[in-house]
Image (tube, rainbow, N blue to C red):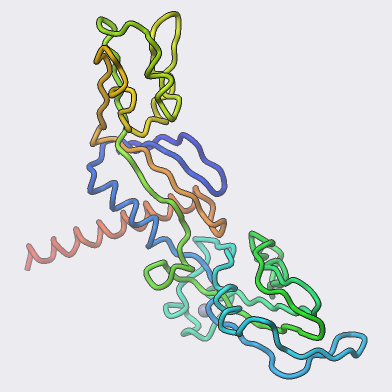
Length: 279
Ligand SMILES: [Zn+2]
């Protein structure tokens, strides 16, 4: 197996994996989607009753939305996750009571009239625990309305709830092959006009493939060619992968973690089969 990165930013990855079968490519896609763990807010405590501000002004702890909706919205806020630091709460040495190895605590204290954003979540800990995207709208408070909330985030995977899904748009396609038969091609340029991804270009009076990795194998070039000079096909041992993350983990950490999980799973499977054969 060989992996070549085409594009890698904090929240987006595009890479080519070669020397694998379609079932292995699909295993990597599914692992990226559902098995990479991240932190998300799971428990939210709402203060009930009046809330006084510094000037002694009294607000009521209510908002235009039900508490359940606010808790749900907070659950979807991307929480920064160190993939090598946190452990699942039920497997932590604190026996699920909550400690810095398995839980991040946040407080939110806002009085209306105001708009509440994800950036109003204050971590009880270092600044590195501040949420990644500070402009996720939570609720708009009216006059004399207020929110005082304590929320705790814990590790989970998307198998339990979509709020623990790190990646979005995770997918792959066969690596494209586009060949132009120069004996038939008369460089009419129809294929260049038709291609939606600008894969083909005209160079020195000839048609050339200039941008192969952007090809989505739609075969529009092949259909439009009046001389039948173009053939397109997909390589079933080479795949172009692409995914985005919600910012809780970097794209590099997400891919590394997914590959580690897959490797461990295959190792465990190999061991169990080995024991069956021996037994
Ligand atoms: Zn713990």
